[in-house]
Length: 231
Image 1 (cartoon, rainbow, N blue to C red):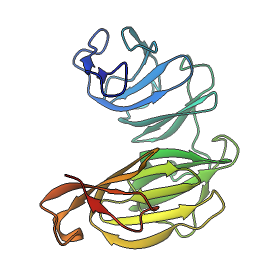
Image 2 (tube, rainbow, N blue to C red):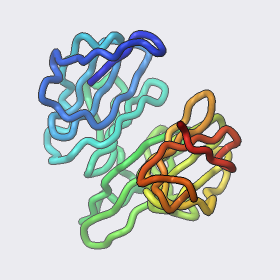
Image 3 (cartoon, rainbow, N blue to C red):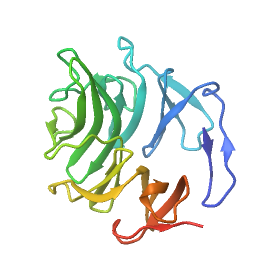
């Protein structure tokens, strides 16, 4: 894990307590940094990232940890076997899969978690008896989940202002507001997307843009309507 103390500053590797761990996701609360590792569990660090200790999450579940997100005072953990939450800064964790296809012989492999207004969204892929997947939302802090309609298979989602942008590695989707409907923007071959206070950034594959090489970074400042290659 690398940390930086100021915008444009040098990045410093932090190994104490994290040596040899594969970091999958990072989330920040007012007082802590939460790191989800692939097989080694959840680690909690101070705000400077110089000290870490292990949180004993999901001890009875053989799960890969994919995504971690802090929403208010609740930490949401997306795993290869559904969602877990903690309301005490990672001391204890509880299964939060009511309404998700993470039961009845199915495995719901969570790929991303985002929050917008009054809703929390999880996206993932179903394996087991039947294949599939898609998005679900919760309006009660993860106590129960409702399937999105329409429901797309998505592996990367971000929020920007009052909007959600999502991709499944091919299509780019957009939703305005927590009560909006997710639509296909008609843009293809986006493998990843992120948002900042200046706009959206995406990794596009060559067939998506006439002047793109194998993989390029593109940005948009008009809610994803027009994309320009960086550099």
